[in-house]
Length: 121
Ligand SMILES: [Zn+2]
Image (cartoon, rainbow, N blue to C red; front, side, top):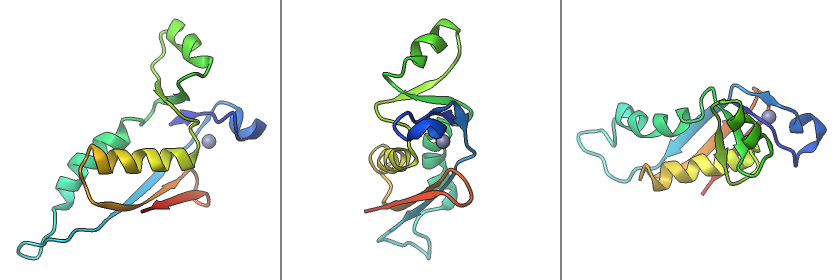
């Protein structure tokens, strides 16, 4: 996903992208025949949320680039916050929890192999 974060200095404020890595953890309280929930059923709920941003340019909704990309006919996504790893981790966590109705307890969102955010409740 491409993005820029103008609040995080000159380097992060430039247009760039990452191959994000997302790991989610869940806590289930019921088990039937040794299974809490099939991994494939978890994937059916989480993957559309995570992949919604795949190969898109993500901008804060008031970024001046929104108007330019619209004029150019380019596809992009917007969010109501700076696209920092911290904000993205919390945003995806809450979407999985609230829209997906899954008992998510922790998310790791990495921008690189050595730079990741962990958010948990
Ligand atoms: Zn970045």
